[in-house]
Image (cartoon, rainbow, N blue to C red; front, top):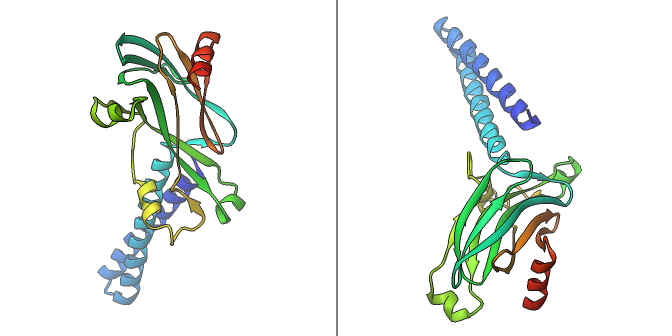
Length: 218
């Protein structure tokens, strides 16, 4: 359990106790103390619920303290400019398959990076995968041909990203408006590993044949 979850439970628990105490005092016609306890209890309960929602949302972001593997992706060509992407994640048996149109693949992620008081408090940067999409090498095709975009990961709980982005003046120690993407060519049998660092996503080939594809593409 994180410190935020613990704080949320403590705040909500104290709020409930104060609310009960306030109701008891109101029943005894002690309106001054009763109203004060009820109001403070409701405030604590609301604060606990909000902190709990933020904590639940942060759990959808993986902690980022160093470069680490995010996913492995390989491609099977089904037709011209049409591939099946097979994605495997580290430390989990989950395997996902997506049909991707185009010449290149792209993975996007959201980054939560702390600054100022957040960094001094030792808060880790976090990331969350957002989408896999296909790209066409030709700009006209990119404008007009069939696109493919697939969601990666879940958006659960309070939308902390949008909340911070829209209210950045009130939380200056959070640098939430930060996205990262990496893209490389799709080829039949090509295999890549996507990693994440403090500066964002990067992708590397996993075998010599794929490395040759990337070298020729560059």
